[in-house]
Amino acid sequence: MTRSRSKVFAIIPAAGSGTRLGAEVRKQFLPLQGKPVLIHTLRQFEFCPDIDEVAVAVPESSIVEMERLVSEHRLHKVSKVLVGGERRQDSVSRVLGRLVLKDSDIVLVHDGVRPFITPKKISQVIKACRSHDAAVLAVQPKDTIRRSNGGGFFDKTLDRTALWLVQTPQAFKASLLKKAFDKARKEKFYSTDEAALVERCGVRIKIVEGSYDNIKITTQEDLDLGMLILERWKLSSLH
Image 1 (tube, rainbow, N blue to C red):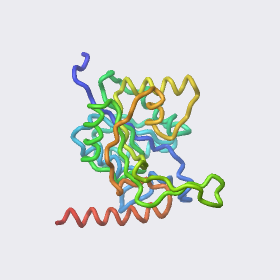
Image 2: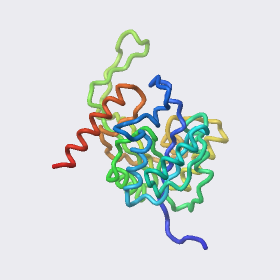
Image 3: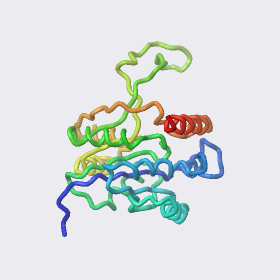
Image 4: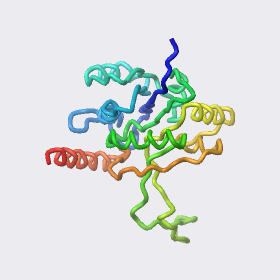
């Protein structure tokens, strides 16, 4: 029977090698206060009432381990654990092709190593996407930003009020995201995020204010900072 209502899907690409951390364990599986980074991420989507299903892409060698973790941590919304691709865009494309989507559905893409997203922020970006077809979380830089073309000297100070640091999740109407990926595939175009693919289809993307806690863990310094963020979150929940 065909379902009548629209649904919200989350794609979590987590197939990266994590080479910058220099650890034997891939960064998405590194422990953060007793749980893998990726599990912290997935739990936020599990707890978000606006999310219907979650699909995660991991390296082929991690499929069995990922399925075990999903069961162990009772992540009931994780409906698919799939083999990711060489690059983020490849992983998202593979998962997108496996989801049964209506054009009116909403699809979110979120980095597997951004464990400090919150259900509230997830819901905010979904709400914005319902109104604008495409929405991303972003924050403005705190520091002065200068440009250097040659690398040795500055040549221009940029207006930071016009600049945004893009985060995830990024949310899109399903028909739009599929169109953007089809176009990129035909033109052999690669980008570091889905928003750039959608913009190439002539769509303007709604900015939703993110959080400075919503860091991406790529270095040891990020992991250390993540420990501090978790400690602060725990303390704030006690008051």
